[in-house]
Length: 279
Image 1 (cartoon, rainbow, N blue to C red):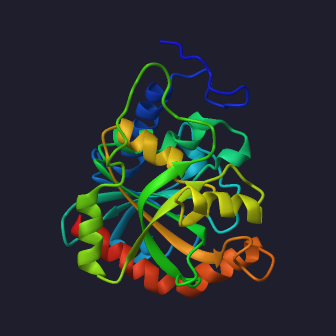
Image 2: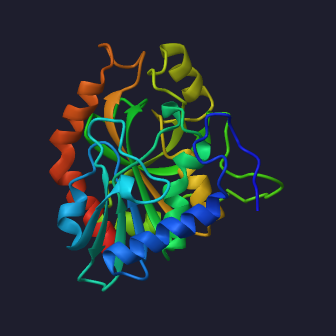
Image 3: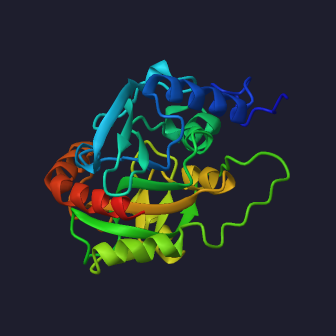
């Protein structure tokens, strides 16, 4: 089966994406010795420490050794996939430390390859995390916020052809309720994804707020859509690493994102691990 490429720069444009995902899942099963994974986690900026306290690491694989994956292009992202056994539930988590962003120019199929691979590996639930800019002055840097809904401002979709996937309840209410049972103080918000890699202008942030966004960033929405197409339940959690442009009184920098993630790391890692243990 041959699919029409989404973009000319899509590195997977000549490969049927779901077949490649099945190939990647088979390699993961072979290298980890785990035939079936249950939960997938994508660890964005600031969230990486959760993998260390989630459970027993059964195997860790350099991402570039798995079909369709490559080394991460962003400082602060881990270039491995880990298979972790959660002792409290007996379930196995697939931790995707190697996220591809749309701004890398590798195409939409590459961006969502991790979701399709996780589904092919047996995962029925996924936790998507990110570091982002906040529009709410009450959310200081280091605040975790559950994603209630999103606004996709990338002008892209991972779904090809006449496949009309319902996104009404994209971020699963049941999983948000579970997260609230772990930490009742968690706020919820709407996440807007811009393409990047430049930060948003103050006018763009103002526009995002007018149309309903509380958070702005450069990831997550395309992955969530692909995960839903694959039939997975989705929990999204953002870490506010800075106030967004025009709201922040100082210029934005990636170093600020890294520092905020490091400062919040132990607390949010414990939160994420506890949520995953209850899934």
